[in-house]
Image (tube, rainbow, N blue to C red; front, side, top):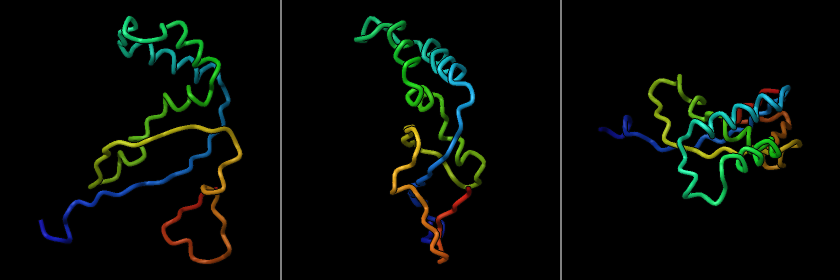
Length: 113
């Protein structure tokens, strides 16, 4: 490949704001995916019921477990999703992820809000 068409590894940083309108639906989906995962619970410290209880008690963990971050670039031609990290925190956002628009050029920062 020539220099212009050589693959480039890039890191996509996003902050996505969501409103959870049905926490029980989120935790229910997380528990359903946990049940379907085929985990050998005999090799784990927890059992399925305890893990499900932990998800019911922790909405951010439940939310993070059901989000499919590969969809962020799934429809972008010429881009292959290779992996990533996703976590959920309650509001407000960390200062590092707040866009401060001083009227200048934001460059490659896209602020939708």
